[in-house]
Image 1 (cartoon, one colour):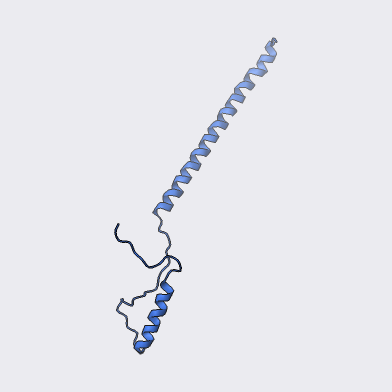
Image 2 (cartoon, one colour):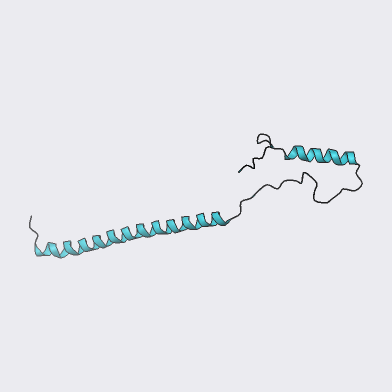
Length: 100
């Protein structure tokens, strides 16, 4: 297949344009991947440095020095027992292994 001069005048510039467009598309994809990677790194770093929320637990032992005045010792014992029952976990148990 032979090409004439007129056909070459049209065909060659179009191949350059197509090559440029393909190169731009490839660069665009690479940039999108880099931005997504940077965003993922920032999100992971933010999660690593953020403090996780924890549930606050009521004081069970009453060792904070506060005595409720106006209550009898029996009422204080009942309140203490109720707090201890609330604080017990249903399946974890109460044993601590300090043998580390």
